[in-house]
Image 1 (cartoon, rainbow, N blue to C red):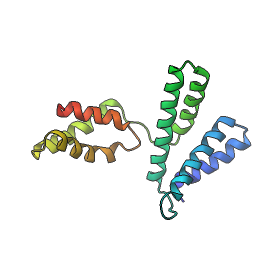
Image 2: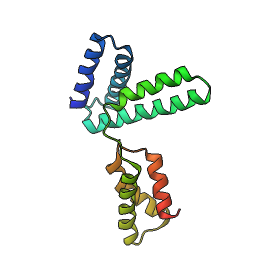
Image 3: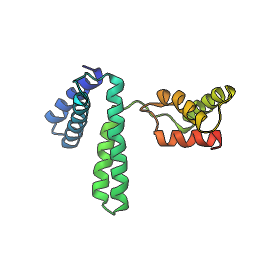
Length: 154
């Protein structure tokens, strides 16, 4: 079992004993998502810490999008609950990269790919292939893709 999943399970126990309803409910949802990921496909598999971080990132993105939708709909109390759940999930995610750090990674990858003579959409794919593993779980894929497009002039 991954160390991160073990940490989540022990934190769930602590939250339940401390009667922290928000943390307990959020961690339960995350553990359910992890279990669903483990049993998806043809055979059961044990997730690594990187896989667990991917699931956590997906759950965090859901909370961000839901909070935005609730805010747009004027349901601030529900948006606040989603943001609170996002704060709980964020405790387990790696430290996010700053915009400058992401830009430096993108610029280095663009320089490497364009030196090889690639351009246009092909270069975009090659740059994303280089950058994605470096920013996995630490930056939003959409904003990274936008930076890559801007750097390539697409």
